[in-house]
Image (cartoon, rainbow, N blue to C red; front, side, top):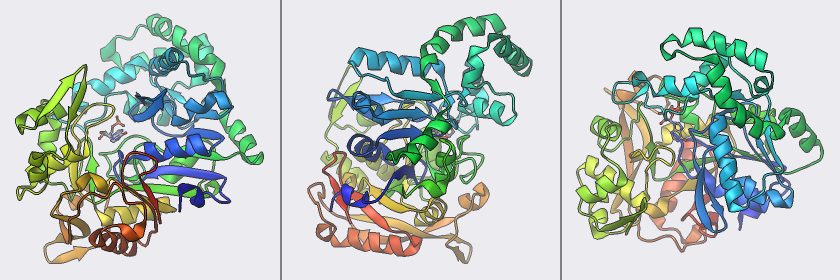
Length: 477
Ligand code: IMP
């Protein structure tokens, strides 16, 4: 079976995440965008996200523009939807990059209703209290929270406001009262934004009306999710969340569709380990609180960790190379010290933030959380990255939370409750290299058993297992 089998009779697909983000949505959105979709759209978040796009064989990280842009010359459409927050400077620099790579963007559409991330939002977000070290949530510092706060408070600046400078000046003047510490100079802000606003102006559309037209015309539509259900403002571990609703509902609403319009929601789950970036409860975290504070500190980049643990590597022009199956890393992923095991898994699976470079916190896959996420997002599930843990002697999946003498199988958004839970694990035998396996039947027995248990526990259906970053390294069940 191939991914195409999943797409029979399907007009709309959403690639979303059933964990805390960074589950490898990119591989699948890229596939659907290039091989199938007529329209690729994003509905939530901003440049807090990061995904790799392959342009002329070279990998590039984009933060706003969806993967589908590389097919623009074929007449395919790319939409930045109404639910997004847009940093105009970042969008302009992504357009510059496309220019320098010779990639056209004639069919790019930017919603006039999207909100703008203003320079004072970025300053506010970077201010001390947002930093994880100082007890903040450890945001990406891109101004996401402050921009959405202004949106919810009904004083945000929408993309279409940029083209009426009197109105824009009034709005910025109001903002200057709300952010007195920043001594906002209204004229200066307008001057700074003007060239970027002019740059994006030709792409501004009523994208909701366009989307409804595309639906009516039977165009194939891909929704590219951002972040993950457990980071959703509506369903995640509040307040340790992002400021948009990254569920299927939020993603569909963010482009003007109903969740019911989505024929095939695909919820991605990293398996058998998962990650989280930034602060907040994470019941299965390897190394617990120690790992949480370690990951919040500076000085633990991938390079630092390679050096500290004596793993041979080369580093030039920011490109770091090492053997992810170096015997020392294999030793670490099998360590009885969970903190060290977590670092080993991070190195083996390359778990460092695409946007911030921060080390991601690592733990075993939490089926309790996945059951909750899958219930809200619906659809089928895709399991990613089991291949990166080849060489493990044993892995675990969490099927319950123990508190005192009680065991619960229900996820809670209450951080205190989550932090007081001890995960109840089932252990499975580890496995060797699985990167070349192409059928479910050929997967190691213990992995099949874990997938079976996981489906049963979550009442969800696993449709795909990804065994490597390349398109062919995919098993459709
Ligand atoms: P914000 O979205 O920058 O406000 O950050 C809020 C929280 O969401 C922080 O814990 C971030 O680390 C996390 N976050 C935001 N975007 C991503 C993402 O794309 N992947 C993983 N975590 C993210």
